[in-house]
Image 1: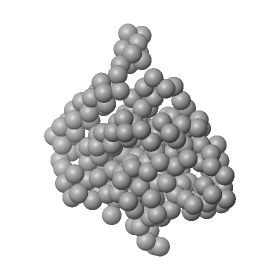
Image 2 (image 1 turned 90 degrees about the horizontal axis):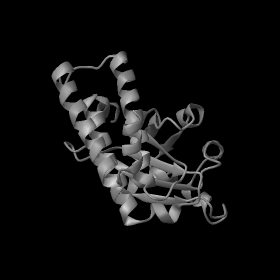
Image 3 (image 1 turned 180 degrees about the horizontal axis):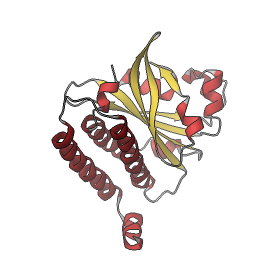
Length: 214
């Protein structure tokens, strides 16, 4: 185990993303053989999915940090149909993201950094260190949403696209309490985030959780 941790600590971002891809592919093949592509998954399988995805997100955090250690946390929001229309609902999180903070978050299209990434169907970076009069308010956060992310200073959100339908089914939300918005804006970090989102889609598809979306 110590050797594995040392390997992960020294691994490059590309290698870590490749490891996530390998894990996702292996799980996808196993699940398709076990439960069938069109069968409804059980509660136990949903729990297993959550555990596997959490571990994948923890690994993804290491890939995103690279040589810039920061307090990075990752969550997954999926598009769901509610009475008032389609919304992004929080579904999965890395192990260092508090469940209470995470579980209550929802965004409408164009609302918040996540909602804008959904709307533009492209990566969006939010610098929340900018004064509210010219910064946070432009994201359209509600009072309750602001309270849940009050310590967050930078957010990078990339869309998760269903590769078979071509539709956006959710977003990968990457945040930090450190002021690293400029780091999130770099092409290198955005590329890693998009690669991670593609592997997350494979995991969601394998577990049948892509069908939670509309």
